[in-house]
Length: 261
Image (tube, rainbow, N blue to C red; front, side, top):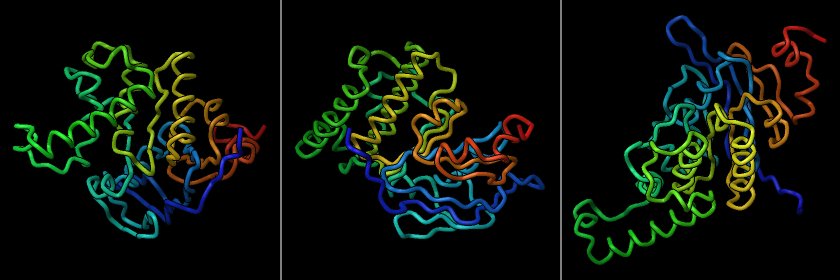
């Protein structure tokens, strides 16, 4: 297999601090993400991992610091702006439309790319019909890629959890993101489902060239698939480097094991 080419910094997080009332969720956090890498954010429960993702994709506005995406620096962005710029997100708790089919759920990820207005879409004339065909074709490719062809018409709520997570990934991929934020994509999965999801994350990174930022609790998974890892503990950064560097970092060992041995 050819060695992966990691590019320049695509996302730079600089001195981010976030508080809720008197509680500090993040304290002066800085790290970067390079194009085409898989960048993991790890840490014990309550470390601030999801808060960090929420700052990146505009759900939270940090009190201090800035985020630079493709050379443009922002102290505040909203979620819509972030999505338009090419950042997609999956959530720890699935936010799928349970009564809608797999196809329609993934199709909803194409909303930002639809040019025709609602009336034209409703009566499906001319350009709107052609555009819908093009979007459906893109969605069908994602369904094939994620190996869920057999469930295209199935309401998502009837699928097992592991497959629902796959549909959630498919909806994010439908946005054709440059950076994909995955919030615990393997949480609650059995071993086989985790292996499948690992393979899909690696394939998304490899075949689509998508940069991935990943929060994950399973350290085996993180060490296997990540290029670099940033470690948070109680809202502070305590480690940053390759999986091997992080694995041997005394502060990281202490945070996870409560001991320096």
